[in-house]
Image 1: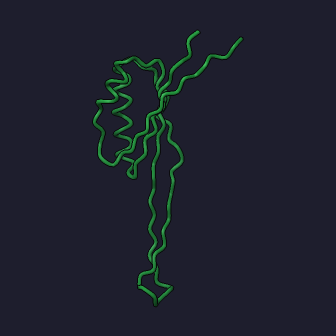
Image 2: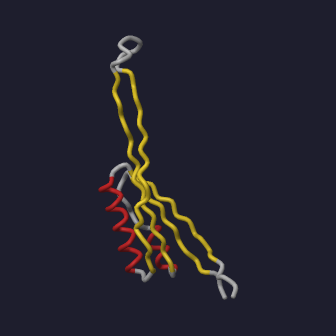
Image 3: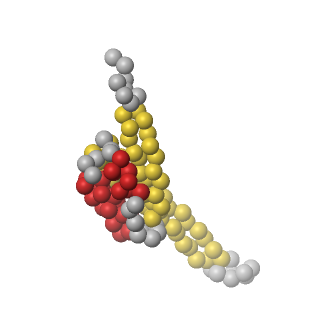
Length: 111
């Protein structure tokens, strides 16, 4: 038996609307080329909080607080064709979206 090949796509963005739009584009492209799709799976949001003093060295009690929220999604594509990979590589996504694509080979379990 041959080993099964899977493509895992991780998408990150600071804006949830942009990440949903990019996810929809990827899923539509994969469906058109005949791949089986698992996802999008929303991963836990990463929240980074920063506290900054308002003045340089006086008024220690006066501070501003900021946070950065990073939204993440995971998509697995199975039974992909060369056409699927070609379409995904030529896909133009909105600005502010970070994508990482990994090819995973799964060995079948021996009986």
